[in-house]
Length: 404
View 1 (tube, helix red, strand yellow):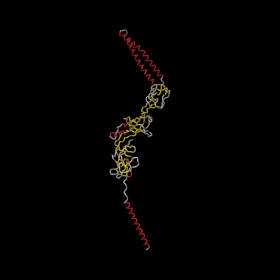
View 2: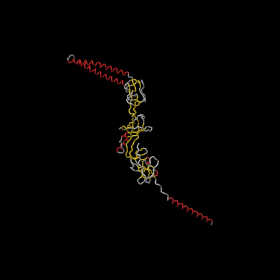
View 3: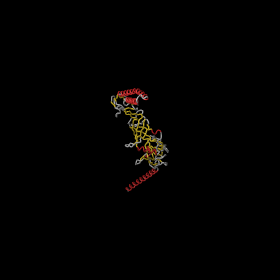
View 4: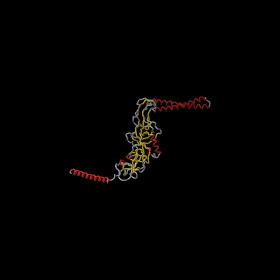
């Protein structure tokens, strides 16, 4: 009897617990069914519109002097004096070296004396020839005598011309004793000292002058880049008209931008077979001597202006497993769509898109991790550089035009 009462109580409590558990389970299901749906994800977008962008290419280059003059003697002799300071700036016509002029002065004096002697004999020989010509009319002298006098006159006149040329040559050689600078610029170290013996047109230069203002920058450009640029011009995607098109910027080796702009002189027509590139020559003003020959620099060359360019922020670009770029856009129904893109280059913090977008597309910039293609989203305006987005269902304004 006691055992039956115990079993009865146990069954009673088990029944109560089962009822309570069922009640709680039903209440939980009711609360789960009454929970609100998840919120629609919010994304920040930019509305792309075509805009004008000046496209540039950064190419490595090397500086070279505008003009270079290697100073060599034009006569033989001893260096009497060096008349410049090594490493200084010299002017055109400035005397750099003085060669001993004694022997050249003597040669000049000798040539002048010979000329004077011939000029002194000229008068007497001319008068004699004139008298013999008068006597020849009267048959007072022979024809031979007159011919000899006329020939002597012509020979004397020729001697005078010869000695005049000799005097001029001697004067020129004497002037070569003063070795002058043919161009203005900065002169380097001297290869000779006072008292050194030099010879005319010797292979070793006495010194070298380099004109540094202005200065050249030679920039190699690959033929692949040249052909690509030509195709874009022929396709109408670039416009190279404009007075500022030939202006070139410069970045120094320490990443400092050179303050003065250069001008593109020409593009060479010969391809270097070892590098597959052509040379662009740019001329830069260099009034302060910042640029020195042989420096490595980077030239920023303008390709042209793209009047129908699409720029989108770099963070809006994703890549698939194959590495192909794509962007997520919001269509007119507020749903996310994937769009494969072709990128040209990075310009600042944006990408220049060659194909894949049309005017008015709303590209998602922020909130990409919360959405998938086909999902519905709520659109807000992307504020570039502010770190926050303004609320509201309104389209973003076009990105401001940017150029390098």
